[in-house]
Length: 101
Image (tube, rainbow, N blue to C red; front, side):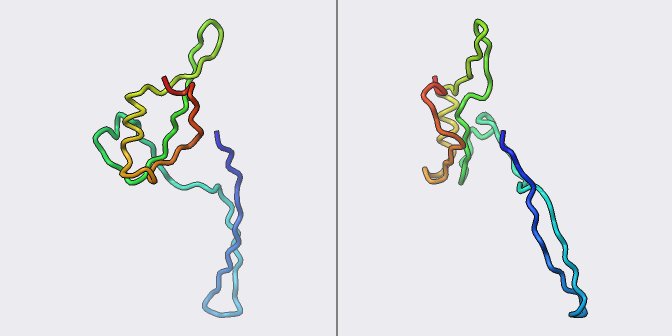
């Protein structure tokens, strides 16, 4: 979860007559439209840039204890091999050994 806090920006608008001015304050969340694809969806494609989340995001209840899911080696291969170059790979979080089978 990422907390987004609203930002304000002030814009000065001039009208046709120089002595008429309007000040507008815009308040909104600092985000842009984006999309995500599963590793299954991008198989066979090559992308310029990829942002990867390799951590397990789901938990399985085993004997009353929440065990995080892991990234299987096939999924890991597909995710890491979609970018044209190493510079095109961005990891969203630090990869821990326990996240990979």
